[in-house]
Structure formats: structure tokens, C-alpha cells
Image (cartoon, rainbow, N blue to C red):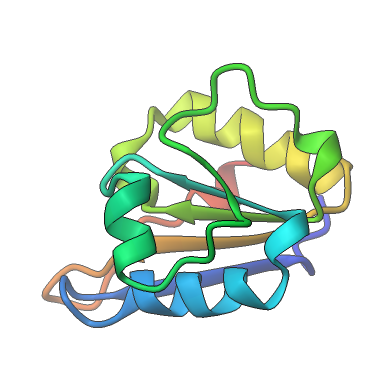
Length: 116
């Protein structure tokens, strides 16, 4: 599997991962799907997310073929098997994927990409 289109944002809580996702998504508002199981759409808009960006809080009934960019905030809040399927599907469709993940105190991150 080719992982050239994946950006993994890892950091401690409160380090700005969501703000970086929002900033990136706002560069491509009409072609970006922003999925967050942590924040509501209203909260993200209050933090600066463009209203033009499609928002979902899960992967149900989402047709990835209509997007070029997939932003996921954040990895650990989604079922591991589901997220692996979604990322595999997105990679096959050549979407750019930006994923936020929590960094543990010892610097380790949850790297599911080795299992795809």
C-alpha cells in the first residue's frame, strides 16, 4: 500500500492538532470531508472550520468518492477495524488523508498504518 498521501499529526492533548486539521481543511473547503468523533460541527466552526466543509461525526453513509481530502480527528475515537477499512478505501481512491492521533507521555503513537 502506498502511504504517500497520508499526514499523521501526533501530539499531546491541547497541542494544536485539531487547529492544524482545521487550517489544512480550510485550504480546500469544497473537497474536504472532516470527521470528528470528539467535536461537534458547531464547536469546530467556532474554532475556525469553514461552513463549506462537509462534517460528519462517524463514517456511516459517507461516500468518499466525492472528496479529495479526508481529515480525521482523532484516530483513537474510532473503531480500529472500521478506521483501517476507511483509510484503505481512501487510499485506493487516492484521497489525501490527514489524521490526528494522541501521543503518549513516552512519545509513542498509535500507528495503525503498519497494519494496512
